[in-house]
Length: 165
Image 1 (cartoon, rainbow, N blue to C red):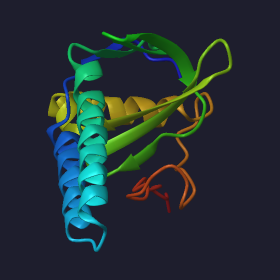
Image 2 (tube, rainbow, N blue to C red):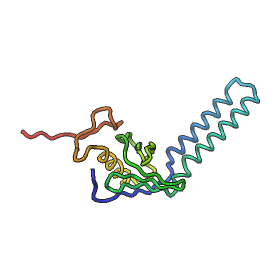
Image 3 (cartoon, one colour):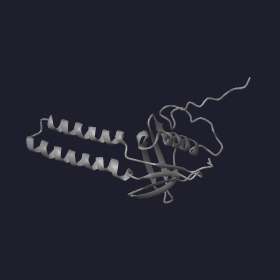
């Protein structure tokens, strides 16, 4: 569905996702320390869990600093970040949950990219605009029909059709 104006959203690291990574790392460390493994294996596993947690923490925060997500109005999406840029079209309907959105795109080479975007990664109004733009962009041209139950929306589409009498 063509749009009159392009959409440009500046992204920042998500505190929610970063907090989740830190929490899961701490849970893993606690589980290893409370296990009945020999002391040397607990120590080795703890170091490994800490290294993996640190790597995932950096992965969750660094690429999003200064990242920009844009939609040109004609169906092309682009994500430019410090790790490079990716451009493509929606390959599937967006998966929408309260507070987050997953976009699945296909680039010109046929590769699939999945972007998981949390509400706290952008301004509140930008998140609403992004959800609506992705929802409408995934529909056939000119169609405003609701998505069938169980497809594309964890909240369920609340589109209502008015009936004339």
